[in-house]
Image 1: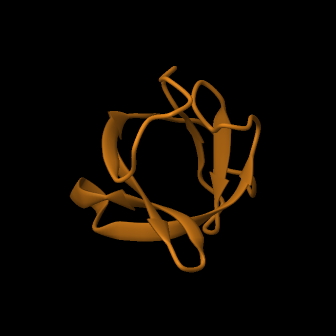
Image 2: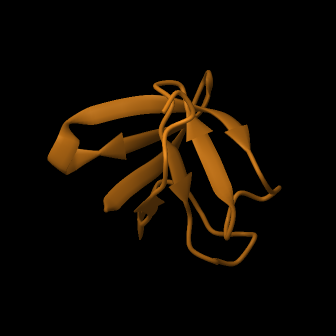
Length: 71
């Protein structure tokens, strides 16, 4: 699914336009986040593509939705 990742004053957030959903990222598997799993406040787990560490935000990427943390 296409998602936009952006930096906000509270931290990083993810916006999924087709779901009309914006959630904060609450945990990351890697630092920087690229190529690893991230967990959103609503429990979704997304796998992000590999990208250069210095990728500028905001950026739209193709992420894969995995199982939810509460599933």
